[in-house]
Amino acid sequence: MAHLRPLVPELAEKARNELNEVPSRITHDLAALKAWLLKQPHLNPRMDDQFLVNFLRGCKYSLEKTKEKLDNYYTVKTAIPEFFDNRDPDNASLQSYMSFGVNLPLPHTLEADGPRFMLVRMGAYDASKYSIVDVMKVCYMITDLLLVNDDSSIIAGHMVLVDLRGLTFAGLSQFNPTFIKKMTSVIEAFPIRTKGIHFINPSSGFDALFKLFHGFLSKKIQERIKVHDSFEALHAVIPKKYLPEEYGGSGGRLNDIIEDWRKTLVANRAFFAEDAKYRNDERKRPGKPKNASTLFGVEGLYQLKMSNIRPISQQLQEVARRELNEDESQVDSHLKVIRSWLIELDLQCSLVDDQFLVAFLRGCKFSLEKVKKKILLFYQTRSELPQIIQNRDPLDSDVLRIIRMGVGVPLPETEKPTDPKLFIIRVGCFDVNQCTFADIIKVGTMINDILMRDDDQMVICGMALIIDLKGVTANHLMHFEMDLLRKVAILNQDASPLRMQGIHILHPPPGAQTALNIFNGLLSEKNQHKRIYTHGRDLKSLYQHFSPAILPKEYGGDLEAIDTLAKQWEFKLADNRSYLIDMALLTSQPCSSPSSVLKNGSTQRSFGTEGSFRKLDFD
Image 1 (cartoon, rainbow, N blue to C red):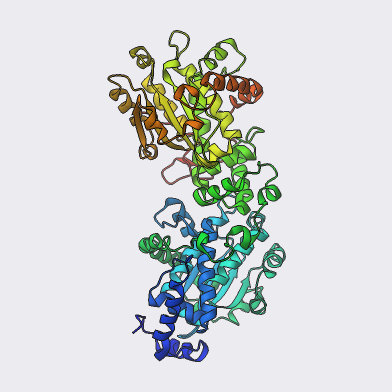
Image 2: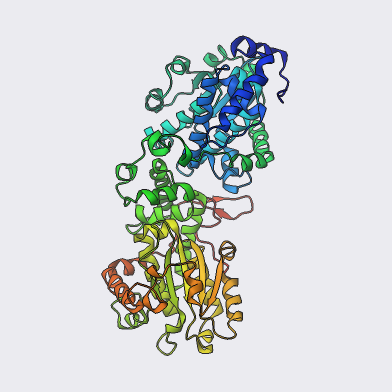
């Protein structure tokens, strides 16, 4: 016997009359569907009766259509990770999007057997500051809950009310054909029928939006679209009792409905964590795999959509999508949001170009909130550290002497094109009689500035550090000022888009554990959870992680001598002299835009960070 929720009589009758449901055959239909699912090597679906019967109902008990829709449902969820991954409702950023109430199921249906009303408020969020991608993520979180819990949605469908009030040009600019294709593909993948779409408060941009969407909708849905130029016209079709008070109805207040759904999403945190397990493995699909490129035609989108960003390899694109939440069709809209914010803070300049900004987007996994915090910290820490950021001319004799010590040297090769890049730090090459610790960090920051701009593999895949302590003495340790170390740790972790993927310690001297404990304490909480390996003098232990083919010959590798690599970086720094000197100008400035006053009296800029450049607490 199937394990299903009992239906109210009105919905049970509608299921029989309109969806071809025969209660005595449900167990047989489910068995046939499960038998087929178990034979699909690429599918990893939920198998509970209620979930599967909802697809049968959505396909009017056509077994072939149900198979196709289930396959499509998981294919779309796998191919669009920006909508369906990282859906923890306790996440602070998602909480903000949940509070906007862009997509709201209304509490009352059209009679006991009528469709669920869905209110879509496209102007409910500030499109110049927030991403449509995360807006849609929350929308589909709600739809997934309706799919498993709401019999009215499954059996009677949805009646969609689209409120265009407040829709701006910034909002319209977030839509493009590829993004709309993804949205409509998701709609088609759910077993929920659209019974009608009612547009209200049409704005001046409605015609453009309608033309964009119209071509992607099925003919059946196109015929169910109505446009109302007043509440009175809407009330003639939908009785007031079903609508919120703000729409002239008596169906509850919007803020209460928004808060109820926010609580519902949070209460279902475990559901979203479990849902993430159910995805396709397209490598196992019989025939040709289906992915974003085949479904939405996004191959080559970098060249087409983002002329100011270097094209990256297909392998790096896959890593960026899978691990960094990068959606090629939305990068432009993210960049527009960040540029607008920088202009508001009076921080935009020629050095802060698209390539610079996309490094921060990738380093923050396309979380706009994290990007703005990291960029502010990037500016502020550089202001706090003039001894590291200023006077960085690579042709200056003092700076050149430090460059030639070769303390920090990026390695050019990796085993796979998607491996983290390697960076060797030879602490013993720091000549304490020739320079200070701040001077060494200065050159390291110069190198990082170039890597952040030029090395897509490092930005996307991260870096692994090999810290060689050979030759380190107590004299070296005496030059490590703790206050400066703390600030440098913030500069290279919290304020940098380059992500740490592992730390490997070589040749620790006797008594080095104390120094290593201090070093570990300077790591961010996230980096403390990365693997830190101590190899002693055993290069074979290092080879278990990195092939000799990608290491310098001093480390038993096949590459040229590390001094040769350091010499190459000397030339590269000289070639980028103007850029490095200009980058010294990227420090915090007074902001010309007005700030809003919070309840506690502090100021808050457009993205919510208290004060445009609050004093950092390094202690």
